[in-house]
Image 1 (spheres, rainbow, N blue to C red):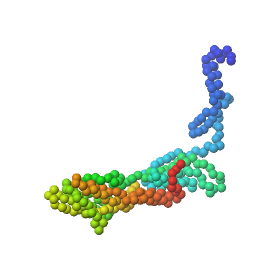
Image 2 (cartoon, one colour):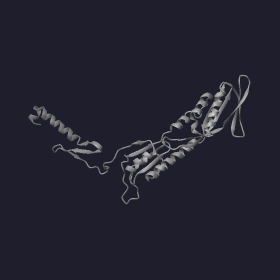
Image 3 (cartoon, one colour):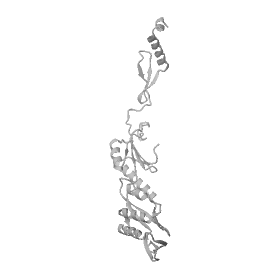
Length: 274
């Protein structure tokens, strides 16, 4: 070390920086690039990576309906693109930059898998409204009001019949219910008694059918529900439960995934993306 280095702070700093650069000659850059820091003019020299992928699109949009996914996939898909349908999460993912198939003569090579488009199916507003009270027994007046408000969703029995049932339920508010029996017609007869000991009878179907979309943006389907009753001295509790609705949901999801495959010409795999 010269006397000038000892007396000139700037020279000492240059020596220190040079030593630090030589101690850590490899510098990490953007997008996974690496550089060496050589002593000659201290210029950065890129280190080539034989496994680096070429520049690629990085985008993962989420769409709201099947047609939007078809439109997006048709714009960006290649012969290696793939659909993965996850029935557990109700998602259909278009993997647009998926790995190349083994049908080519070239050896298999990985792809970035950074460009996807996903359809996240959501429950329709109609299904949400009914499903919120499914499985519960509620006050007859509240149930009558619900039937009256949503009678247009019902196709069997006729909506007018359901409205009439709702009115009958309102008319029996405050009476004592005694029993419930099943009739040969498939209906239930609920016997009640007024405060003046006048007996009456009300007939209610054991089940009804809705025609509503299960998923937002999809066509309506038929769903069957069973009425539930609990006559008691304190009043009548009513409700309903779905009949095999989960099977219907799974079938609808598979139809949506198949329709997307037909609209895009892409193969579909049912499972979960890794």
